[in-house]
Image 1 (tube, rainbow, N blue to C red):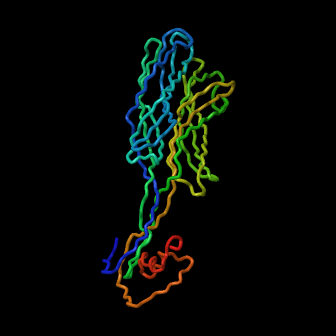
Image 2: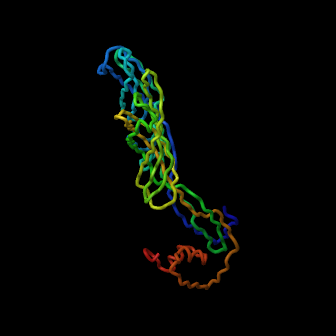
Length: 356
């Protein structure tokens, strides 16, 4: 805002600055359809196979930002729990990895931007045909992108030839720090006593949910912590099934930035695969955790928010002004102090190159 009109013969000088800040955008893909056929011929025992239950998790392996979209590549991990009705045994677990590539449209996306992508299986259709499982899965991808933007603002202002003043306002803008599309492997041993399990219990399957607890900056590194809650499916001696939950903490470390201020972040974690096996009196649990993390900080920008124009400054026709600048003075500070145009100072003092 500017109060008052510039009188005739009175000009103005404006000092511009630019600051980079991230523009956040997101997008969702159309369903990516995957197909596979899983044969059960190699599994032991004769009889008719049936599907007890199934699950599909999406693992993102590569993210490539391009103009107007984000390309994501990865695998959909399909896990089947299969029961052979002709064999008196517990169900068996069958795994398949279905590779995919998908496009996620993101408005304003450029190759200079960055993004994280999360995937989910929206539809999973399974059917038995003889000894084959026909699998059709639809995968939906969601991209959360950071696109660099440049903001030009007025750092300072003054009028030449008349009194003037300006008001400043401090604005907070985000500063992009880091984007993480990562995965980590969790391998832990747990005794049967710690898990609260009897020795005669058999482990059938495992499923996991990952949670994020917090992000800290320690000695220039980002430390992301959380825990996984694993649900064990157990077979009892009488043939019945039950479940048991176990929580295991996890920790991920990435190169960070200097400073001690707690970072601002948005993080999501998911278990893309989990396996469990009995190792004597212990359980061996292996989990694959996918991470999608955006980290940013705040920067303060002081900009001119209001300008006020006052009375015209009277100047004599033969007036000469002699100024001895201090070490801290700049062309701008001298020009503003004496209401002189910058170009006039440069020309009148034969300033060029480094001297300017």
